[in-house]
Length: 341
Ligand SMILES: C[S@@+](CC[C@H](N)C(=O)[O-])C[C@H]1O[C@@H](n2cnc3c(N)ncnc32)[C@H](O)[C@@H]1O
Image (cartoon, rainbow, N blue to C red):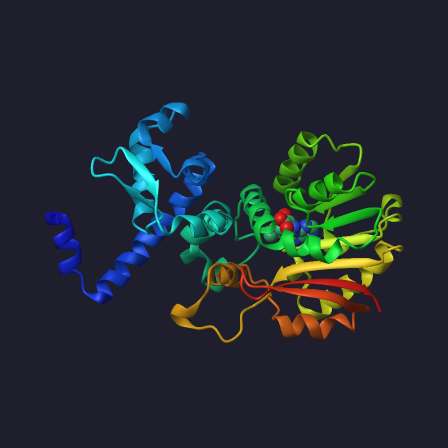
């Protein structure tokens, strides 16, 4: 055992270790996002090891910074470094960190500024106007990964047997879902609607890369105030993932859900997938993502409904649950397939 190991194990009480883990976890979270963005996580996933100087050279990166990122990851056992710190291999935490990287990206790249400036968003006087800044582009990249990993497999199961010719995706973000649907269904036409310019620019790139400009239309608009358009008349399926909570509070949710049937007069299926406010979770028991999701929405003063609240609003809004799937990660998440009541 080295002198430094003796010092860290012997001198830290359990409480101090807990505190050090909190500090290290914050840095490791940023390191996961950075490692994903620079291709380091994918390199580790494909071969299980990375030689630092070779990787750095291939990316024209500073080897010392690549090493620092890997050391931060090693603090949470995502990788292990050899004694000379020349190479890293995946450790027991890798698989889980790899599959949940989108949550870390959402947190540090998408909501980083919100968290670093949190003290300036507490006093009532500071909470006026557009006081929250998040990075819409990074959020759409993060959500694309979260949705692909955790929502799309059950979503495909829910709709595989359903016929539809034109789909509109509300709050489409990166447009990944409509690109995926258009690639799986050759005759399908799709419309992606999102209010954020950053999201629309990521979506445009994705649609262009997939060569689907002739079948996918992107519209920058506010889903809460949609006005009928000629191209909405053919829409027989609407999907909405990870933004349904923006329909709330209750009265506005009822209005938005009802109005969808006027905006899209031929709508036969509405598929809603979202994460709800947690119930019965406290202190150290918070699962992955829940704490970040709820903190951010509280700071933004956005209401988050519970699963029970969602179920209580559907009937009144003119929708019937035809099918549903509950999702374990992110915790307190669901996908409903709704049909007009
Ligand atoms: C959490 S992201 C989810 C993106 C995408 N649905 C997915 O599953 O990856 C939420 C998206 O909804 C968009 N959004 C939020 N409120 C909106 C509104 N009122 N009208 C249109 N888009 C909205 C945001 O810009 C963002 O791209």
